[in-house]
Amino acid sequence: MQHLCGLVRRCVDDYGMIEAGDRIAVGISGGKDSLALLVLLHGLMQYYPKPYTLEALTVDMGLGMDFSPVAALCDRLEVPYTVLKTDIGPLIFDIRKEKNPCSMCAKMRRGALHQAMADRGISKIALGHHYDDAVETFLLSLFYEGRISCFQPVTYLSRMGITQIRPMLYVGEKAIEHFKERMDLPVVENRCPADKSTKRQEVKELLVILQQRYPDLKTKIFGGMQRLPLPEWEPVRPLRQRKAVNGQGE
Image (tube, rainbow, N blue to C red; front, side, top):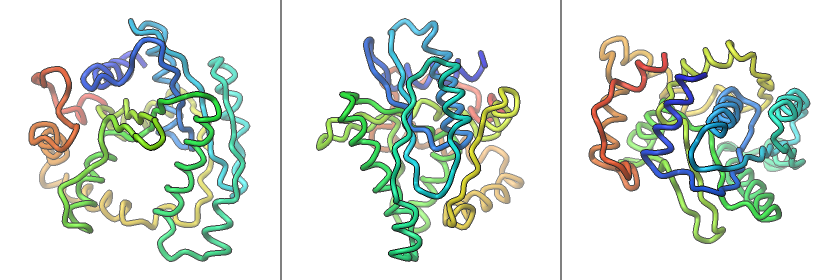
């Protein structure tokens, strides 16, 4: 807990993600990443010099997932929690029968989250993307779009007046998996029909193979994204010498 909170704090400080008085929505899918983010931000909140508050939001896709264990966790942390009921899943898979559902699904989920934030007067949301997500997204853009691109650590959506932050970018996926087991996080079974059959999964599996031959590949890609840098990836405070983030958390 202390170690991963330290990595989250470093990321938050490096990119100026949190200001005093922030009300931060945490987007909770029910997966290990978003649940770990909630617990770590709650832990950081106890001692971070800039006081902030949290509120958890879940978009229920209408796929029959049970979020009551998540509600119990939020109650224990004393974090307000709201489940936003939608029919996004049936609309995409049963009615429209989308061949490539992920893009439309993400767009509709974002729309529901942003509207809920607007209704509550919240303008900042924390998302559970981690170190491995960043490397995979970089390769996805390169392989399938021919672009050098990735999501940004901090993104301002001017049309909605919303700031997205990704505080777990220095935390590896294996570290999150270990954290989930140690903390007994109430992960909700993902019932999405497209789960584990996406291009992202293909890239994830390719990286496993490449890492066997080039053990520091992900570290080099991530470091290159900061040093190049990609738009908005250069830390707001000087980039200091670090161990490989992947090695720290795993």
